Image (cartoon, rainbow, N blue to C red; front, side, top):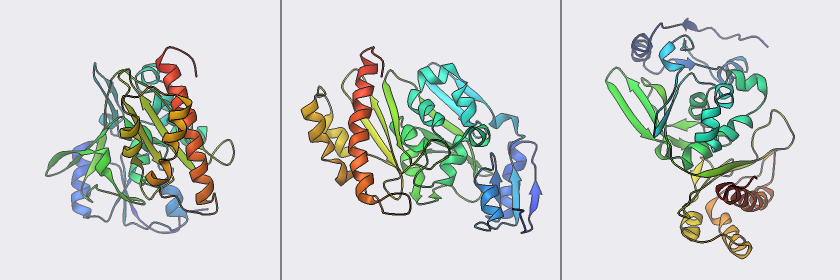
Length: 287
């Protein structure tokens, strides 16, 4: 299917030029990074725009920077680049695992993590990992830079707090000792959106973090569950008790891909399975 709507194509050479364009177009522009969502939406006329700003050639946005206590993922970093990084596999295992479960190889080669959170669909795979890591989104406009907590980023289905004249530079993710997994429910192997997803993180002090996707209008942390388990030794009995809190944490819908009841049932199973795996990994075992 061809793109039949007209738009002006711009390819800025650097961030400053991109910011000038965004300011000039005043909301009448779309950013093209990986393009795995935007191109489809333009073809299907879900989205129409007067301008497309292609940022793929901006070198400063394609970097992965790893320091002692922080990882910075530039706006142009793809899921495949994350998967191919042994350092990221060791330091951010939940995001690494989520990256492996995004769509297909072809999509992962093009799609960016920043593009994923900017799409803000409720089922996005990267969100649970970024939420349990307390990531921060770095944005810039001509007026200056600002840092946005990932917890404040999503404002509704396909909506974010990003302003029309702002460009996301990348994501900052703190590094600390932990273990964790991303559990995803899909209908089949391959390119499929999550019917439900949960990121699980544990540390040596018995702190537990959980975040979901696809079972609410926006991805969120599961604070009641975290508070209930904080400081406790995990047992089969405790897992069963904790799982009963999940229906109060989520608000799934029934649609063509799954019923709300099935999503809730599977979230309980994935929570228990993911936490057991994470505790095993933390203790030096293998999941």
